[in-house]
Image (cartoon, rainbow, N blue to C red; front, side, top):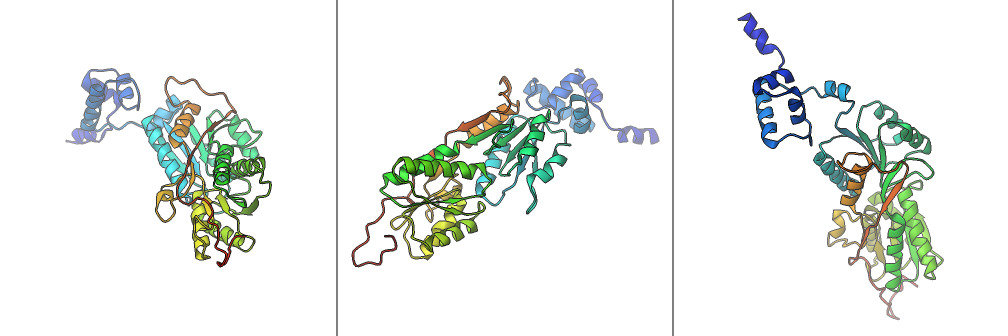
Length: 352
């Protein structure tokens, strides 16, 4: 009886499963490795036999042998902006399809990504994706020197030899500027996001430089400070304390929502009295309350390029180190932008 209890308490091994099925141990290993070369029928038999015998693969032990964990870390610093939750969902779907699990890391309030990366680099992950967080050039250099591949998503660090994949934010700003000028607007404003964010800086550059090329060298710049509803709302209120613009480009959709509500609270119609555009095309941009003109990120393409950069997509040659891939976004025109209404002579003119 004691021997039977000892036998039952003994943990089954891959060798036990292989002996039970009359196959090699490598077949058992492949059956538990996502995307490995093994037939669906054999994979099913192995899983059923493992369940019967009580075998469970030891992922940690396997990683010590193979030096791979099938795990990719995602560092995300902004879970307030709905764009990043959408981006995260797209990334995780592509990683699962490639047989990878995800380790999600988010710096705490007021905590810089530099403070958490050293601990993360101690994990034996197969790759690191950094998005919605500002990375210092010093930490980017450390990441670039690691054997673990690191990809910056939707941002880059100028002058640093590290891989990056991003929507073409300069081009997006240019597309918004051309659209607003074509509607006949003459006074413009840009509401920026974080001052050290490459995404906000590039969108501002594309917008302001294109306006200048089209004959409008003056553009009001208002610092929002962060990508949030409240930041956009308070920035719009500050704009209204000056001569109101005809059209405003917010660095993100969530900021544009706050701005639109602030303009409406002040008695302005959107559009009509003022046009508003954003960037990202989050789900709420389609809501009738906002119907926001914006730039749609090519999320599927961006995720595919990130996996190639990490070397996770089979039969793809690794991309060269240090290069930045810029992918064109799509201008989505909705009803938050339109021709400016000409005020009646007897009406109170909000806009000169």
